[in-house]
Length: 237
Image (cartoon, rainbow, N blue to C red; front, side):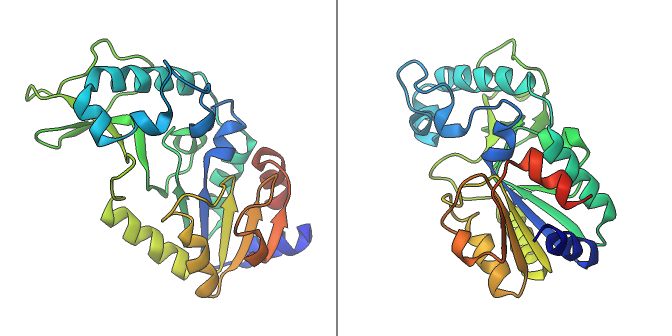
């Protein structure tokens, strides 16, 4: 099976990859739902919403500042680096990630669609201006735009739609792929998980890399039951 996957990746005209929290967890970043369990007696799902931000933007920002400090200590792992290397070799390559941590960027990937946003991006709630701020901890909470309005994290919250332009690009990449890699994702979060079905229906060979079975495991062509940092370097060697 390993040689068959290697052949697919070597000969594919177009490769698309979907990554989830699992690949970041291997770098020491807690998965979203397990981020230290309860944080000040709140669930992540109760904080990552427009309603929570409207009620208490400072409190929500304290949580995101805590998350930023955790992520800043992490480094890209061998799985991130393997995907960056695969991009260099592929004729056409698109990396679609549900992760907001920026580890793919730091590993060297460039063709990235961040469908859930980027925790290092700050967006003005009034004028919509976005800026990149890589500091692990922000000096003022909530931060403010030069226009004076409060900024919010540049991520997609529960109850919000994915950016339509990015989502359209993700669907096009999945539809055009000869090989579709599903890496470190539970395949439970939609609409991102639907890309696996779209790629399969469009004729792609689907390869899943995950230590455990997921809801899409029965439909994929190949499965590697191993962590991304272990499996991906072998697949591109």
